[in-house]
Length: 87
Image (cartoon, rainbow, N blue to C red; front, top):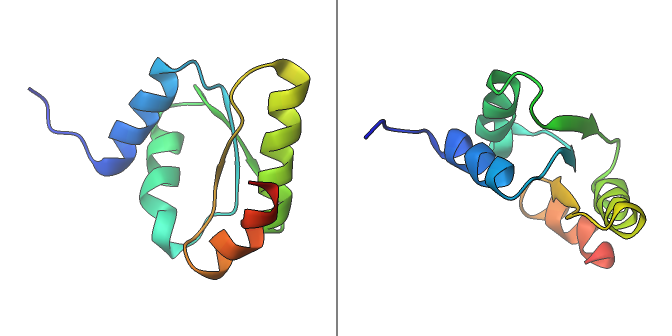
């Protein structure tokens, strides 16, 4: 069995669940995910936002408008707290 990085495993799981778009704010804590998304060659569209709350609300709006899963990624701590209003 081929060894995967954590980021590769997350990207494979997202693709397995037909996720085609991810909203987010990259940071040092989730660089591994963005590296794997880049390596996936555009299989998942990444939309960078300026604020964590915007990423979460964009994912919510995307889910409501498309009837698909809305996915976002933010850094832990303050990033999660900023995004929590949209949860």
